[in-house]
Amino acid sequence: MQLLQQTIEILEKINAQDITVYEFLEKSPFYDYFVVATVNERASQSAVGYFNETLKSSIKQVEGKGQTGWLLIDLGDVVVHLFGEKDREFYGFDKRFMELKKKI
Image 1 (cartoon, one colour):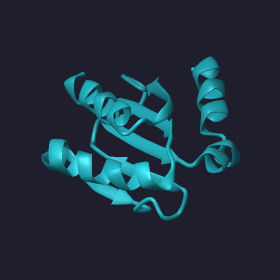
Image 2 (cartoon, one colour):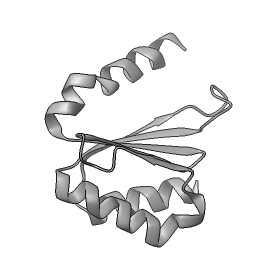
Image 3 (cartoon, rainbow, N blue to C red):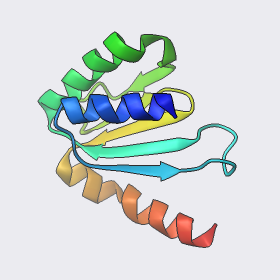
Image 4 (spheres, rainbow, N blue to C red):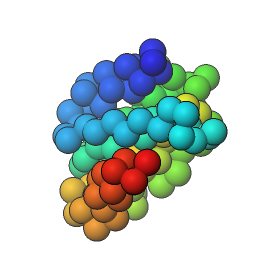
């Protein structure tokens, strides 16, 4: 839970919008939470720096580097997805996770 709280604090620091946490405790052996947020490209780059500064030992993988409109930061139990506004809508993670939550 501390890792999740630190993640949210970093996202608030970079002014991420629409921060949403999806819980997968006891539903996935690979992660406990997905955190989805909307950021601009500059905030996406800042996020990588803040995560490296604060949670470097927890970072398993960073994909996208913020240049693609979708940045993934794998912290093990917490997986962070940062999207540009249009990309978040295009990929529809929120809709998919809400549908999944209803089925589980």
